[in-house]
Image 1 (cartoon, rainbow, N blue to C red):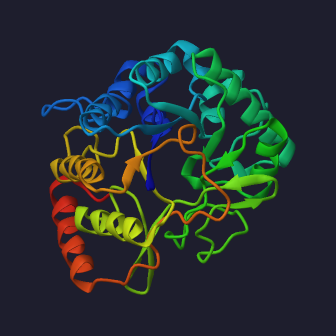
Image 2 (cartoon, helix red, strand yellow):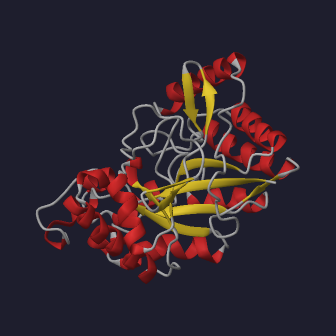
Image 3 (spheres, rainbow, N blue to C red):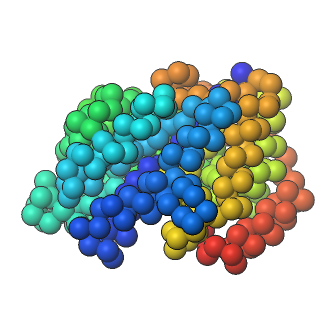
Length: 322
């Protein structure tokens, strides 16, 4: 069986918060988490509706750092519905909230966009603070982590090991210019123990000139379904997909992106309809060292790539560049 991890980075937008102000929590929630649009909600609730309809469990990497500004109640509003519906909550962390927190910044005078902007000891402190906020919001102790913007480094992995978080999933072999600074290459696509933490790379497929990461905005349904079939056929252990709570919205977060909404629904249906595939979480199916995480060995299809480019052009014209 190929385990399919649908991992959703679930976050109040720090950028929206800076633009709208700290008093706009409800609006930021509606444009980042529930994702209210004239076409209906397309955020975490909708994503769970789709997964539930297809018997798929999701992994929601929840960023609890907004608790510095709004308290843990704001995080509980995100965490509780996920747990009530039987999906998994793990730890996400955007350090940008330190700047928004002002006097509540637990590292006075220190701000940064990514985890790798901080020393190892500072990263230990940030992870411990974030974990405490997440658990106060009702989540079990997290066993997996993903850095905001994928912006981890080797110190992040050592920090995770020190605080007892077993897995990280910040390495994205399919993004050549990602903000990840972990000392793994694009060729490192299997689960590996690195600096004391088990790294679970985001999946990828071959594309023209290299790899393309397995994200709902980055691959067409044809490519996602082909990758899934390839993994099952080749006996691959897992396919690790990344998405975001707000990913099915237009770029300005005012409308549903119907192309991406339908792509997500079709892929979840493909998981349910593919013998030998099943949705998985870090708890239900813990990744094992040596597991492949994607379909990078799948032969490149120029037809699928060209079709995806045309679909992305249409999406960008209608809804703004992803």
